[in-house]
Image (cartoon, rainbow, N blue to C red; front, side, top):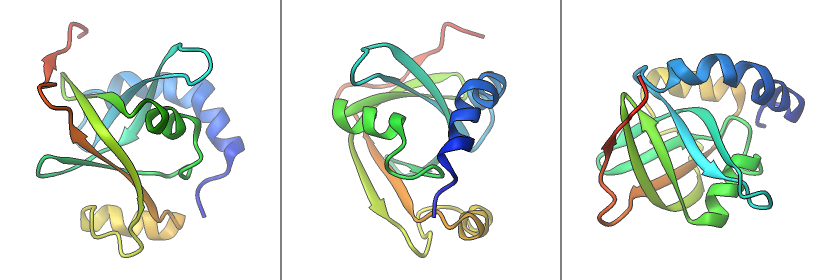
Length: 136
């Protein structure tokens, strides 16, 4: 059972604005840069990030129906800012990871407590290597 949507709305308006700048540089975090399906507007959503080889894993703490997830799935790609780099990621796929084998042990316990079972899997876009962030 993902976190309540009301908490997600609060986080989108308040918490994300505070944590976004820090999430861009902290290990285990990142900011998904995506476009709205209807508005075309660019959005930035702080997330937990796990790298498994070339694959990027993002636990879906608000579920697979979160707007940002739906935006990424509809577009077929997003950008991810982590540790001063912006990478283009493609082939988004939501999958169930009941045993949380795709995330580190410490994160497994937190996801178990929150009953988060879905993750978003992403691959690097062909020829879409990373670029250094222009922002601090």
